Image (cartoon, rainbow, N blue to C red; front, side):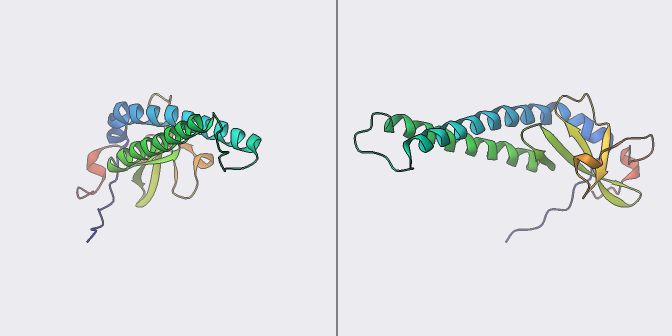
Length: 155
């Protein structure tokens, strides 16, 4: 029943035009992910101090722990919703801590990623699909499809 959506390829210009929206979503992800991570660490420390995950009968902190667990679950769900929003825009989240995303593109007939990190003014790097952040290379003029005419119109 699920139809596979054709791969979306971005030009540098298309990806840069999306940065205001994507940047807002990514800012929300980074902030919320940090809060969720901190809450998870606090809960782990509390559970460790108590010696188990089980609740002691009559413990006055049980209600607070339940509230923290509920907040953690809601926060994780909200992060997933933001990630799904990026996916619906054909943007791939690579690191929710630093705010790193990739846009699929093409160069010299092969698939690549246009790479952007929260805080950068525009997309200025790319990397091979399997290279990751450490394989980032600066965009050079004409090194990656730069305008709509260079890509297949069906993408």
